[in-house]
Length: 222
Image (tube, rainbow, N blue to C red; front, side):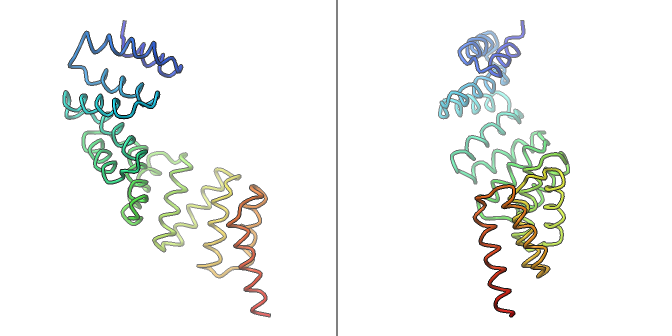
């Protein structure tokens, strides 16, 4: 019996005690199996024992310096604890040791966003979208950092792709409204987008502010 595989099945079912039993046995039978430590760490994350989980991920790395999944898991822990510089280091180590998924690039990008370095985030979020074109959240975040970096035409293109793939994405409509108002100075189109955001989400406060701003602009031009 593959005890790691069995433990993962129980973990996915939310049966944490059973998962711990199998991962413990896997470690006892093979103390140099980095995968078992990573799996055990993931159970501990699930039950909110974060400090213990860190130790298991660190042990996995001690056993195998190329354990990219352990670096990724550590990165997630640091991100959740708002230690974004540490998170970036761990995610980059995950990438350097062979993890080239859209998730790892997304998390590096989002760590840079949290650090206020939106321009550094751009290539990572772009790569994330390239690797998984159906990841709406990654595309939306990519569009945001483009807009924040004043790369408006590409940002608009990305927001438009978001609403095409997810027609109920109120925040994307709001940001389209902002972009059309600020970059194209197209009040009519911006108003349309703000209304669409409110239609989807009636309490979308920012879109309400956007409509009020357009009203003031209209009054000023009368």
